[in-house]
Amino acid sequence: YVELTFFKILCQKRMILSKEEVILKKIALCVKNLRDDYNVTLSEFYIDTGIHLARIEQGKTNITISTLQKICDYFNITLSTFFMMIEEI
Image 1 (cartoon, helix red, strand yellow):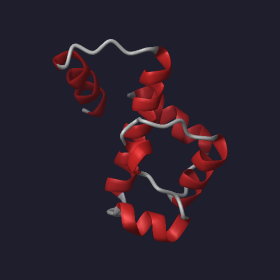
Image 2 (image 1 turned 135 degrees about the vertical axis):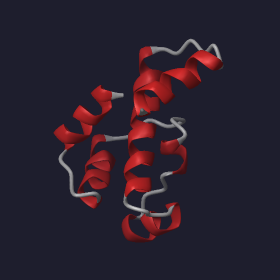
Image 3 (image 1 turned 120 degrees about the vertical axis):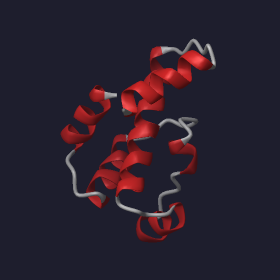
Image 4 (image 1 turned 60 degrees about the vertical axis):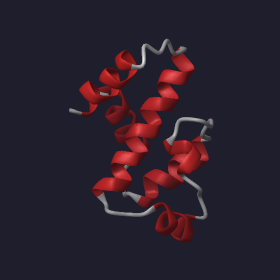
């Protein structure tokens, strides 16, 4: 479902994205899905981690591996699991 929605949005907007933009959008979608699955607000996540997710979830900023690791730690998943989730999108 997530995969279909992601690409449906891209097609509807007739967007042509670079590979870098595509991966940022996939990361954004994956992070947002995790946060939604755990019923965590942006504010709660920031209070718990010190990480602002808004721009990350919009796919408007690059994310470092260390920040991604902190996000994965928060949701108790490994980086490899996160990247597998991205590949499924």
